[in-house]
Figure 1 (cartoon, one colour):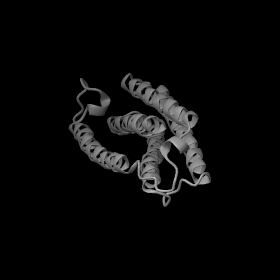
Figure 2 (cartoon, rainbow, N blue to C red):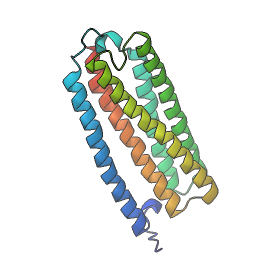
Figure 3 (cartoon, rainbow, N blue to C red):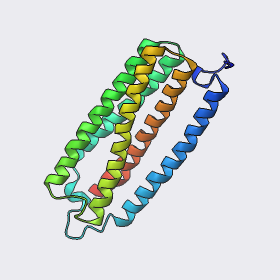
Length: 198
């Protein structure tokens, strides 16, 4: 395996370069998934039937906490990639671990939010609006959950194998995934929550 030392470690082999390109293709498919969910939500957001509307069920405090926590995690994963590029494995692993803890914090607030919805009767079968709301939020939440397991596996590999072109490549691809989830959340925050509270 030929390593090009003039490139960042995650891009240093042809195979690594192709894996990153392949992941961008995967992200394109994920964009289509969430675009479909958003389109369905916007089509059905006023179909509340006898159930509550967004303005009646959305609470700004948990949403702001979720947003702050997830955007902070995007910053820490960026610091982790920077640490990786300067060869500081300990700092990299620390920033990745902080990112995962923030992701766990985000999920905890989201679980509270779902329990709140269930308590006030905003379930999947109440209306088209609540069904699409919970499906969209749940899909994002499942992606974050998967990211927590994936990130944990990467930390284990970094501890066992050290910082190599392979582990750097996996770590960088994971960071792209995490940033993507943050971008999706910005759309959820702006066009579902803020718009729905008006």
